Amino acid sequence: MSPRSDASASAAIISLDRVSVSFPVYHGGSRSLKKAILSRSSAARIGRDANDQVTIDALRDVTLSLRTGDRLALIGANGAGKTTLLRVMAGVYEPIAGTIDVRGRVSPMFDIGLGIDVDLSGYDNIRLRGLLLGLSSHDIEARLSDIADFTELGDYLDMPVRTYSSGMMLRLTFAVATCYEPEILLMDEWILAGDAHFLAKAERRIDSFVDQASVLVLASHNLEICRRWCNKGLWMAQGQVRALGSVENAIESYEASAA
Amino acid sequence: MRLATQDVVDGLALWPLWIRLGWNDILQRYRRSVLGPFWLTVSMAVMVVALGVVYAQIFKIAVRDFVPFLCVGLIVWGYISALLTEAGALFTGSESYIKQIRLPYSLYVCRFVWSKAIILAHNFVIYFGIVSYFQIWPGSVGLCAIPGFLIVTLNGALTSSYLGIVSARFRDIPQIVASVVQIVFFVTPIMWKPELLGARSHLMAWNPFHHLIEIVRAPLLGQMPSLENYAAVGVITAANALVAAALFCRYRARIAYWL
Image (cartoon, rainbow over all chains, first blue to last red; front, side, top):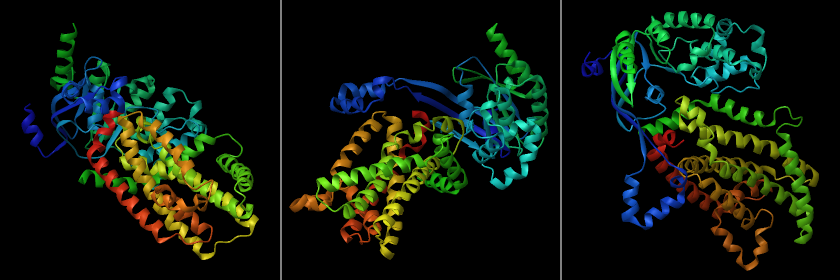
């Protein structure tokens, strides 16, 4: 598939065009005001230093586009840029170079603990997280029983979240994130922390809403899950796209390189 | 510029979220304590009474004159200094949110200012205690404190947003702010009346904090703030707005990278 024609396609829900992201690394000293002021005083030498500033290129020239029904698996070694790419898609990092166009409501699931107040009850946390994801309180109340059913936590939902196991917290987070059929669901690997029963249930839920015009992006090291849940694959290494295509092809070339 | 304006509009529109988050911030800090946030009220009340009695003696002023002055001054100063000293953690403290989910940055500013306003409201109870004890009633002039409070709040929001941005990049800023705020407390007429400066009381015209406090304090004590106070506050607000707008437009997208 040619990336260029894809990017221009109007049906693209997420399209990235030569997106690059690099992080400045401020080690101890350079993060201080002292250094910034001192560097001004000796313009020539440290001015060059400023250009030499250590940066980490987390993503380089990433071009891809996803359409309705695409379920993309991000694979690659640790530090390949999978999480950064997810965060760019979520709008957390605005790219240094290149453009990104995202159409639709994004539901990120990177951190189970986000917006969770461990002293509040499960129900209150559902409300809080719903607000964070952009639902109105009215929407949340309407879906509350649905969410509660999905979590299968029953009476636990009245208990403070501090009493939950991480698997239980995961159920709660997942249920809220998927309660309104998000148009774009971004998931980092922790989803695999659930038990087999939960995973099967999560898979059914994702199946149901990916059919309804949505996009899923999953970053994972579990190739088995990637194969089952996704239809496209993106193998990344050192922030660059190595292979993009069907999930089988991407996994094959990834495994070939690892072998 | 357009993105920055959009950010502010979206942030304000999400009021149910920041009202809730700000409220949670307060609850979280005082959870399981009997008095809750009223601990602040108690400690402030003790301070007002103790300092009031001692300093009225030192300055040879009637307690009846001095204590209400001190009380309102300390309450307003408590609000201003909390806004300044804690602004450094505005974005760094919300790192987990900023890195996980795209929310308008102005939302964090609203949440921060709102939670400080809640604390102010708790402290304000003391004012009513003092007013009824000394049988002083400001009358309708007291209502002028409301626009005064709103202007101080606006300045707090502007200042904390740019202090938050600069502090995310340079981690020494919060320390600098903390020491400056401490000095300002002593050179601003809060514990002493401006008349005590005698012939040099015009010096206070150059202290921006004096004007900011005065537009709230004077009405609550039954006097109209001077035109000079309002003019000075107008200039301060304009300057703050310019700095905040410039830094916010320029560096908003970089905040996530600095955390």
